[in-house]
Length: 148
Image (cartoon, rainbow, N blue to C red):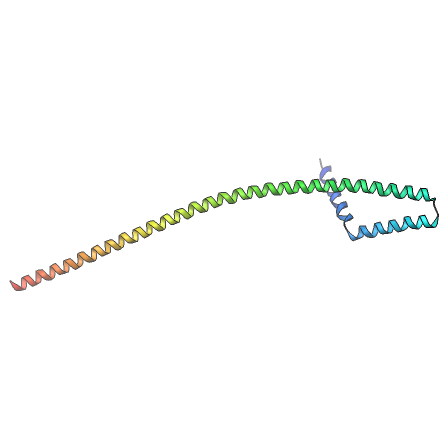
């Protein structure tokens, strides 16, 4: 069961190496050696071309396979991230609903507080009026006592 992750790691490493300056250098050296073998006539032309074409063809086949494995791995990773984003988006929508409800509650409480303050102001105004009327009455009673 451990082989797929190791194979994926290997594919990622190969693809990462192929895209590196070291790979360009290694391939350049390989091509120079093959051209030198062709020019030097150490081996026959057909033998060098056969070996060169075989190596290049096998490399191309394996690179295509490794690249496809990497694409599949990346696609799976992107899909997993996409699912996570959808979950997070749903959570954010739920949080937004909660925030909206809290905002409505705060507004309602503010309205109730404003109404309560208005009632208290009305009560205070009524009390002030009653006190003023009582003072007038007391003053009138005192005046009437003095006049009698």
